[in-house]
Length: 143
Image 1 (cartoon, rainbow, N blue to C red):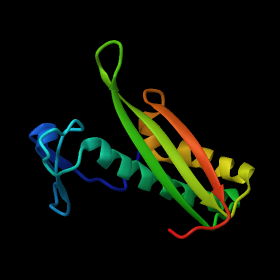
Image 2: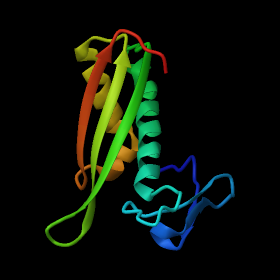
Image 3: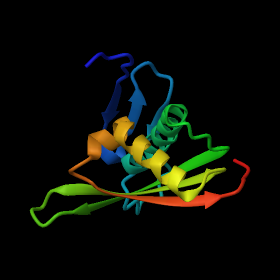
Image 4: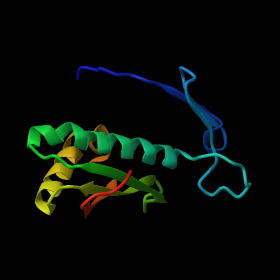
């Protein structure tokens, strides 16, 4: 695989610590998803949801021209759940809600399926994370 972008981040203190991109451009104080301390911060699942949502929406923009499909706008929301499997391991659960304007249902489903095939986040979780895609068609909206 030809790598055309690379980044790295470091976390210290786990879910109750801090994570930061190694170039210092962005960082977050972390809190566990069961934040009982009242500490302000974010958790890894929230960061994953933001990254996946941006990547999936970008994948749709990437594949649309090759498919001859021209949505007027789109937005992607990713809900991330975390739970424990029967064997004691932890796993994620994903609901991806895509809102698309300006397409009929068949074209929207084609676009979303192709985006799901090329999105790096989708490829990273395929086969080991429960993932559901939901389509919401609208005529127009303001983002």
